[in-house]
Image 1: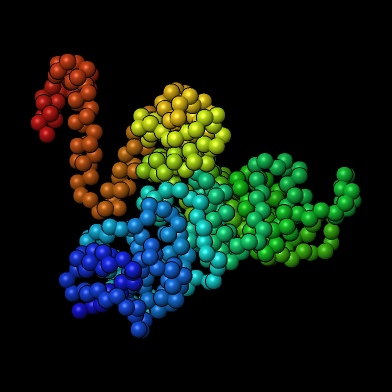
Image 2 (image 1 turned 120 degrees about the horizontal axis):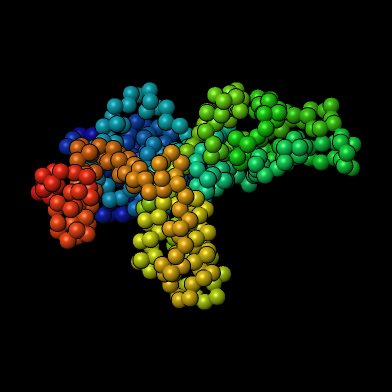
Length: 447
C-alpha cells in the first residue's frame, strides 16, 4: 500500500482524505522520514514555511479551505507542487496522484526549492480557477530573478501583479520604480530613464539620477511598454543585456542590479511583425510571462471584489454604507466590464458617493449599461462570446463531454420560454421570430 503523508491539525481532514483516496493508498499523519513521498499539507492549520523544507525531497500538495488567493500564492512561493481547494473531490485527487506517480525519479528529485524570502502578502482579490492559476504562476515567477512580461486588457491590475512579484521575491523591501512609457513625453523619456549630467542639455542645471539607477537592487516596472519609442528600444535592450548604461552627457558607464518587469495591453508580437517593436527586445522582455484574465472571464470573483471595494471606500460616504442589495449585485454580475477591475472600482466609488440609503442599490447603477463599450474582437457589445467562453473553459477543465449539447440545453430552453411568453404561446409566431421551422421548434420543446 502506498503511503500518503497528511500534515494537518484538523482531524476531519484526515477522515476526508482517507475516504476519497483510490484503492491501494493509505493515509499516515507523520512527516516522511525519507524523500520521494507525496505530502498533503494543510496550509490553514500548519506553518506555511514548513513547505520549503518538505519540498526539497518530496512532492507537496498544499490544501486550503479558504476562498482567498493568499494561501495559494504562499504555497507556490514556498515550493509546493500544486495547491488544492477543500473540499477535495475524489476524481481530482485521483487525477493528481496519477500525475505524480507518472513522474520519474529524476523529476521527483528536481522539485525546485524557492530561495528564502519574507512572508508573502497578497492584495489580489478572487478565488476563481483563472485567478488561482495566475497566482500560482505569480508565486513561482517571483522566485526566478528574470524579466517578466505581464499582459492583459486595460484595467485588469497589471501594476498590482508587478508589485506582488516584487514583494514575493528576494528584492522585497528594495525600490520599486514605475515608468509609464505612455505618460512621459518621448523627448523626456531618455533622460528620465538614464539620468543626465549637468550641462548635458539646455535646462540641465544639476545632475540627476535616472529611474534605472534609483531602482538599483530593486525592480523597474515599465508600464505600457508597447508605447516605448523605437529610438529608445535599442538602448533598453543593451541595458537588459549588460545591466549598464550611460547617463546623458556622461562618458562614465553606470552598473546597476535591477530586475525589469514590464506590462502591456497591446499585442507585442503583432507590433513586431509590423516593425513597430524590436523582436530582440520583445524576446528579452518575455523571458517569463504572465497573463491576467479579464473580469468577464472570472465573474465569480465579482462579489469578492464588490465587498473589497465597498470596504475600501465606505469611509468616503456621507452616511454609513452597510452593504449592497441582491439586485445591485445581480446587475454587477450581468455587466461585461470592458474596463475590467478599474471600471468596477470606479463604479463602486461612484455608487457610494451617490447612495441615499445604507445599502447600494440599482439606482446607483442607472448609467452602467449605457457606458458599455464593444469588446475587442467581438462583433458588438452584445456578443455571446464573453458568456460562452468561460463556460467552455470550465467544462474543459472538468474534462466534461458533450459540451455542445450542454450549451444548447443552457441556452435553448430559457430562450424558447421567453419567446413563447412574448407570443402568448403562439408557436407559429415564435418560430417566425426565431427564423426556424415550426416542427423544429416543437422538437426543441420536447427536450
